[in-house]
Image 1: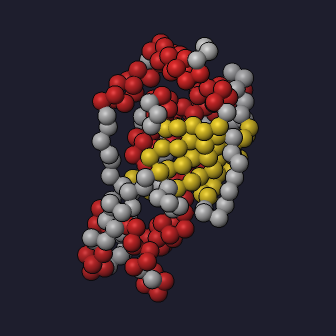
Image 2 (image 1 turned 180 degrees about the vertical axis):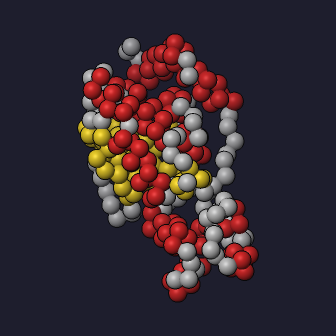
Length: 234
């Protein structure tokens, strides 16, 4: 299982994308060949609300019970500054990596990842830190809760239609690649995942849209109405 969000999860996601026959078929079969970068932003990470004791079973495996009990009520946001380098030396590798990623990769409560897509291949994927900047073709933003829903099987097209996921970039070109965005979500749901944080509540409206997206005729009508409202010329 791969902890989400983490660099290990991203590595597995990249592997599945690169091996995806569906991405190859989409690229070669319907003329929607895409070569460029997609910036994924996971916002509102609940680090301040989640304590060490809330972490899923297995994450702290190998850490002495007394240490776990002593840290149980500590928010994850405070964990890196509480556990110094000397103390980290005695921790399991997975816990050390988690501490380092919280410390290095979280920027203003968000994680940033960049996918390089070249036709039917995922050429590269990396976590971006505060010191790095890119000029991606598209940026897709959403809360941790929304991304978790997509990984758990929610159609990413539904999250886009409801505004739970927001695409920044050339809007007309973005409409052309809606199917690709959906496929990126489908592959994410194939990763064997253990979530670091608890699931949030779903709105009734988003559940209804999820069901509509699973029926092509409904999604076509819904998408057309949204496009008319957004662009006013279709």
